[in-house]
Length: 107
Image 1 (tube, helix red, strand yellow):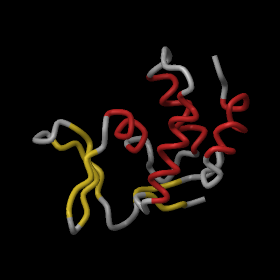
Image 2 (image 1 turned 90 degrees about the horizontal axis):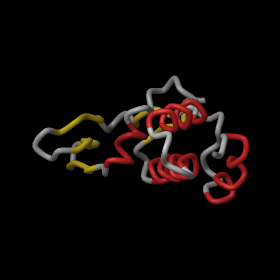
Image 3 (image 1 turned 45 degrees about the horizontal axis):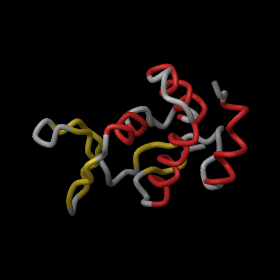
């Protein structure tokens, strides 16, 4: 079982933009919600909608402008204890969301 400190270096080497102590929020021009018609979480914005797969939705729904990346990783790990390598996946998803400007860094 990996821990945050054990796999942090590998995850940060692969995704140097997101640090374990960073805090992110949904960017102001996006709205995150469950879309019943789509059967998934989505990010809505003035020009359209981004459908998030199950894993991405599970990560983004925990982004609240208060939690550190480490807290989000720990929460996802506790929700899916049988999934290995989840920290790297969470950080990769957050890094993608930052690159796409879906998230804004708060701290």
